[in-house]
Amino acid sequence: MYSYLLLLCAITEVALCDPHGLFQRRSGVVPSLSGDPVVMGAGTYPRANFLSDGSILGAYAATVNDNKVLTLASSTDDGGSWSVKGSAATRPTNSSDLDNPYPLQLPSGRVLLAYRNHDKDASTGDYTFFRITISYSDDNGASWLFLADAATKPGGTIGIWEPFLRNAQDGSLQLYYSEENSADDQDSKMRTSTDGGTTWSDAQTISGTDITARDGMLGVATIQGSSLIAVFESEQGGLFTVKSITSTDDGQTWGNRQTVYTPTGTDNNAGAPQIVNVGGTLCVSFMTDEDTQEHNWINGAGAKLITSGDSGSSWGNKIEVFDPQANWPGLLTLDDSSFLYMVDFGGAKSQKIVLS
Image (cartoon, rainbow, N blue to C red; front, side):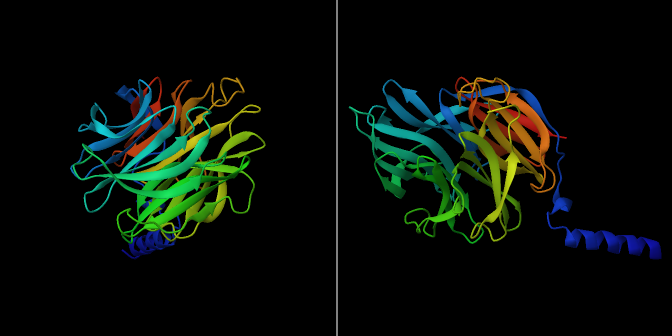
């Protein structure tokens, strides 16, 4: 009995001192494909989140005739099938740039969609105004109205891109996006809203302040409690790698810049990452041209996945989910051992992946 108590105390002490929450991990770390890819719709840049009714609301950018249409799709069987639910915005392709939709339901039940919504000169194609717009739906994505422009920037050659929404623990709403400073410098930004996305704080730079690099396409996942990890692509010297930063205060401050993935070969790229926590295992999607050697990014890029069982300290178990050409992958946790990998692979598609 005494030996048993000593062992129990030892296990308890290790668990309490475990800085990464490894004792919370419920899934394995080795990914494998489950079933075949499923068509979400004829579009690109697919993203999705669960709604409170258990269904999944997906979004992608479709091109219909001469218009870009931000399209919503619904799944009631964990991504086994999808049906078009509606559209949130439509604009002509020659005078606008409408893309990067990201859906999220608020605790109130209202659904938001963040997206890039830029103006262009129809005759020259030059950007005349940049904005990240928020639309809202009170019927689970069937119909949409304008809510706010969360971030804006005058036209020119440098803009703002790739919004990502997150509900914070304190009840506020966080918006992450990328903002260019110059042709070779881009930072990751965050703004917060305490009124459901109607008004927004000033922008806070969370990556890129101390380095000249193109940081972009950021995604965020909770490690445990108020500990977060964000992944993003970063370009220096013309090549992209995948980096991460972490926060211990639910996104108020960020640091600990690390390399998540460097492509194999010579003069190759890895970018457009996203991240989810699946039963305590971190999973990162990205696209890379490391197997094709075309050296004309983004051409020749396939979509891959890596995992971490130690809260992002190390990464491995790489698999290819979609071969070239596969663009702009996104992720959604289904349960403690499975998730959806979404990508533009001749249209928006989703692939179920399980961990063992």
